[in-house]
Length: 512
Image (cartoon, rainbow, N blue to C red):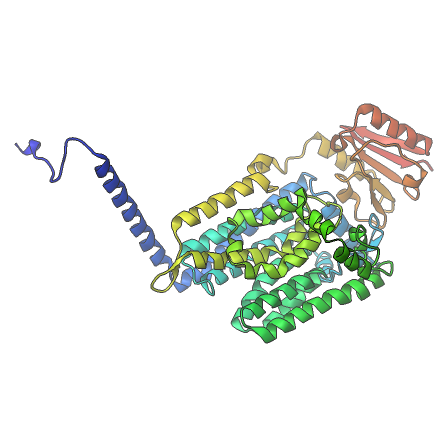
């Protein structure tokens, strides 16, 4: 009967061979459909618009996260110092950061800060800084795509996986939530500078190089490393010129310009005090104590920083080390330097290394793939593992990880209201000493100092010399109640009156 007809090759019992054949056929059909779908996307229009769409999505995401964190009053010193510098520049005064006792330009010679301060005259300062930084962090998506699709000759799938790895990289999200740092502007400039050099666009390369070094003086060494990459790619003349320019810029800023704005010496020599007390002394100390240098490079914090940079891209840069080696000396200096953590592990230092990591990863995928008719094909299993690894490290290490519950940011509670109320009682001419959570709210004045709250202590005359107002947030300090009472009691003995105390936020004003 018709109902009893069986399909050809039908068997009543499935064997392991049947299952293997069916799975193989299903995988082959999936691969063919995926290849056909990618082939449909291999068009100039997609190459033109897709990276800009991806950059816009990343920009919106980073902006919303940063603005929400700011509304939470969670950005701390990283936004407070730039706010004070901009306030002073707007008033025509030198941008001397009270807490550091240094001119803003003595710290990193970040002259890009001048046009940024000018823009702040026309829009709300904090929001402008955060949105501008988010834009700078999102823009590298475009040159990364151009590198992946151009020199690396990757197909859509591999280029997209590389974009996702960048968009999820913890360094990007940590820098986005670490306040404002002009180094972020150098990130897209470094990517674009490499692309301009590859295309022989020397005028554009020169302009982008100026942007890089104006963002931070020691990024001149990163620019020098980029020049060495060009040398290794047989672009010797422009490569050596770029390396010489970047190195000369750093030397000139570090030992001439920054001392002029500061106290007559390079302001970061103290970070290398273990090796010497002068530039030549530090160099000699490192050469005479190589084991000490190796110990600093091999400690746990240095290992974790290296892991944070390379692991989210599956350690792919190690396959093409020539794109990574030139920047390792600068990366090593960052690891050795003993500098205070302004938040989230100082992710602004990652700006120098991250472009080299992503460029090397693009060429590593090219080497791992096989050449097709016109593009390099990379095994989708490698791309899947790359994306999953990037996602895992984003969840583990990013400041906007789901574990941080970013969907709850931006909702002010009673403590936030108390902080704002206390700050509202401060006059604009008052000299203020405030704990880090409150500091950004009072930073826009001539004198604003940070009250360290990591361990309990009692104030003294030296601490409050020249101070009119003290604001203490015990909810962030996590001090015992007895320690807070003792702190307030000593302030009372130093002629300060407590004018406000709600939700753990205290305000003391110097008695007239």
